[in-house]
Amino acid sequence: MHKTKKAIVILGITGILAQLTIGCSQNQVNYSHEASQIAQDSEDEEKSIPLKSRSVDISINKSERAENRPQPNTEQYDRIYDNTFKLTSQNPLSTFSIDVDTASYSNVRRFLSYGQLPPQDAVRIEELINYFHYDYPQPQGDKPFSINTEISESPWNKNHQLVRIGLQGKKMATENLPASNLVFLIDVSGSMNQTNKLPLLKSSMRLLVSELSAKDRVAIVVYAGAAGVVLPPTPGNEKRKILEAIDNLGAGGYTAGSEGIKLAYEVAKNNFIESGNNRVILATDGDFNVGVSSDAELVRLIEEKREEDVFITVLGFGIGNLKDAKMEKLANKGNGNYAYIDNIREARKVLVKEIGATLFTIAKDVKIQVEFNPAKVKSYRLIGYVNRQLSERDFKDDTKDAGELGAGHSVTALYEIIPVGVNSDDDRPESLRYQQKQVKDTAYNSDELMLVKLRYKQPDANNSELITQPIMDKKLSLEMASNDFRFAAAVAAFGMVLRDSKYKGNANLDLVLNLAQNSQGADLDGYRADFIELVKTAKKIKTN
Image (cartoon, rainbow, N blue to C red; front, side):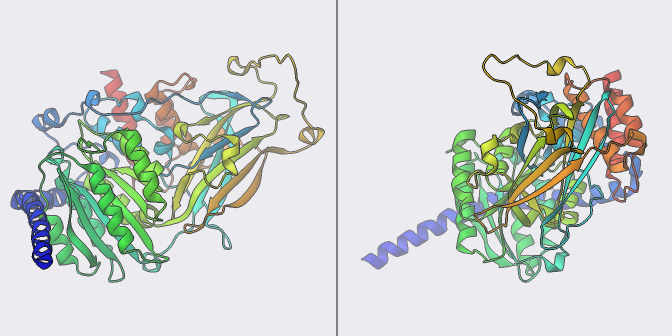
């Protein structure tokens, strides 16, 4: 009798999975053909378009533009309030978590390519800056990253200074990367039934599969109205089997995202590789509407799962109903990173060229704390990193979550500072009735502008390590600053102009364009040339 019941249960589960497989393959022929056509068309287009204009998708005809035009009122972005200037005398410490996400840049590019300015809250300036590669030196010894600094004048306010802090993660050759236990968590709900969603997603996954080897394992979990495993853990060299499972995916139904997340982490945990790369790759538009779906509930779920030492990469797809805020939170709270894939070239950047940075964590919970010398710095403002701010006590608290750094990743932060002696409406101090802070004599006798402190953990560690590095007061003129410094400043100014920030000073798109063109440098991948074309596109849109 018990055997009969067990057989019925097994048959029932088999039937459910069969239903999932049937649902996923209903549009198999059409989507498989469409996805491969997207990949081929994108490659042909990439070759035919001059490098300087590749950032704008000029191949889209008018009817397709109208059909796919972004609708920001149905997309979700968290409100961003720009960081204000803080008086060094009252707030000598600035503490924040690093952010290696790049989704905001490709999302901004998507809006501009369709002839629209992006919503202000879609522009996260640190993600624009960190989209680009900077020529930072590799770390020495056993440290996972190097610390690099540079000081010059602010391009948008000559009375202010700009300080650049750059981290460069240690690079690893692909063949030296540890074995991967990857679970593709793929949204196949009805909202993914658009050309720029599931077909592009499938083409992107194919690119990633091509980079895997026999030491790697891949599983595929899908979710729509329910969640199921359509590919059990499979060696990375069995590419035909993996690609067939990807080809068979089709879209339809509601979106039980939380159930998919639970199942994907369960599969990852059951196949955990010690000292390996254990990661869930969530590919979705973020439009969850069944089960746990609120941001707060999903964050609590993902915070529970990150304790299992499984990291996450979130890949956003599609236009019109993109739930950017939700996906950024999942990546931030799940020990992960977030990229937005708007075309096959971006997929190749994220999943092939930067595979180590995207998938392999070399340091986790990376925090930066800067102490400013009040004898030299009257006030300061961190540009971007608005939702990565930490309290002073969080810096030493090893239970406090922070950002992860991948192999070869670079992270750049810019501070705009007002030197002592410069008048500004933004830094008028409030008088104190009961106390007055005194500046030590050592501050006046020091050549240090600020002290940079970093804490980080090894990927499998619970206790943090500390690195400190002073920054000397050695300001260069803007003309003498490095190309990397000036280009990062141009990108920051671009973000402030798009956000119409009150702190943009005299920055405008002409200033951005001039600064970027004169600091393009070698630009081997053409990403800086793309940025210059993007600024020109923004100028045309604002003019019209």
